[in-house]
Length: 149
Length: 115
Image (cartoon, rainbow over all chains, first blue to last red; front, top):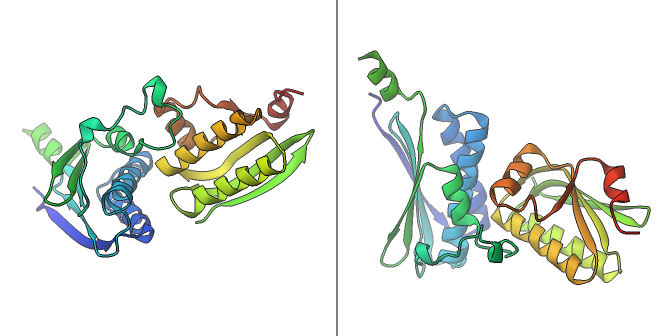
């Protein structure tokens, strides 16, 4: 089995970091062998996670940083984003698909992360929030090993 | 890639040709300013041509919704034209595809505005 590969970045709370993270996510997804549509979904989920951390979490505070990491283990691509903000309760975010919320101008970020990733988890930090997003890799090395046994 | 917006008039309808990305930051601001400017001039029949828009994020979706409601609140109409597959899929999963009036051909879209 492939040894897990993990890269981590400590980034400033700027819009530039959001764009940079999106590009890195696309490169990571390409390295994981994902097709173009899936790659695009993964990079959008990472972009939304970064917006969540920088805009809603750290509120563009230049003294606060965002930690971003990508891990590949041959079976999954795992993305972790953490901020140093006030934190929030994910269950309290209104459903953007509810008829009364359809015309709201914000509140779709977490929904999009969930739409494009296989698993999205939130963990409260002190201070801040950590988001872990997982994309399972079809035809992964482990799948091939299991298929051959 | 940043976003660019240019406008033209056809039969009383303002067509806004957008290209690039409608995302948090510059892209969303360009769209917001364009709509504000058009409404300020009393141009309330607006067709947003998204044929060259490669990408929209949650902020861009919010800006499209904001444009739609701003125009409607002033008694106007806003329609979308030429969605790329990526943008089409995004509006589908967010259930906004049925909220917006989406058109595939420009002439048909223009004649669909109330005259």
